[in-house]
Image (cartoon, rainbow, N blue to C red):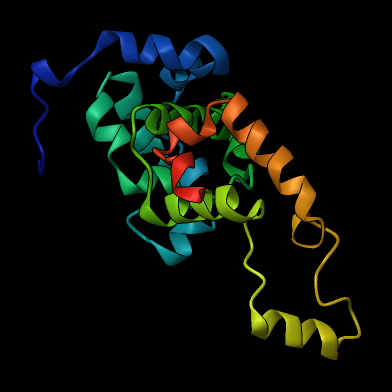
Length: 179
């Protein structure tokens, strides 16, 4: 066994927290058919990815292992695993809940944090740089799409919403840095 589990690692409240919204209790019904893993497109790129393992660790209350696993962020939410499961395990719903818990606990991939900061700075998750503007012009499109990029007054509204829902605090962004 690579990483033996110590009883001190298990947090029984973790599984309760997950299943209260997602119906994750069905994880306990899994009989290891591997339908979730064999149908997963991520395993073609990352063969060691195992959604079933993450779900099992969740059921065992291994909060730290689950929330700090980079595999938590690999799921593409294609729902293939959820559709194939003969026991009706809500795999994707559970993964989304786990990600939400991770972010609320300050665990986030650096790339995701960078995009979140970009949204807070510009109001949009996709940068529009000179290369993008040039390509849009070649395609006979407006240089700026009809988003916050072309409507600067909407940026303050986006920032207001971000602050109102606490997203800035959630990702550790200091709105004062915008001044």
